[in-house]
Image (cartoon, rainbow, N blue to C red):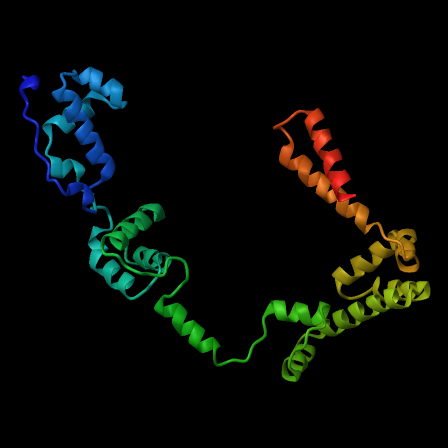
Length: 278
């Protein structure tokens, strides 16, 4: 009879061990407590929201086999390799790609979960995000032999007038003739607003609307299409920047509240925000 089954004893320290799954332990204990209290399989399954087969399995099965963490997966064959790579500080992403080349066919999530369990089990301090594979290290060492400038450094040089070395400047201007055109275009466009000169604006448009660089050509053509507005921006000291900034703030409030509140509350919040900003 099922009611005569003996309750299996548990070790007093199993909850403190990383080798046991806390959820499985909790389910095991709960099922046995309800069973000892006289509840039927059906009643226990309803209370704990599990199937009667699960109740029977946890009542009849062995505690260690049911509650011990399962480290077995398609990666068990790579266990020694993973331990060695993690101990060397290689990140999980690089280990995963190495495993694919070694024949691993499982999912990335399963591989990461398996490595996370090993990391937690052995208290490893590994690189979780930064690539540190031997190939990446060798590439970094090769790059260190060169004197290079970043792409953001080039943009800062062009637009923000940040300083770069003469060697870098010579190299850029000699090897990328487009940078010469960009440098002249930016300098002349700024000069228009510094001098507040409408003739300079006309000369700029005529010069660059047929430029060999399509981006600059489109920019100059756009200025010509919106010439009255651009003329006002050049000649007038007034600006609608404040108005546009206020509109952006109001639109942000509208987008964060849309669909959550009614129109009356949204209107009140916009009016309150505009009054506080004003």
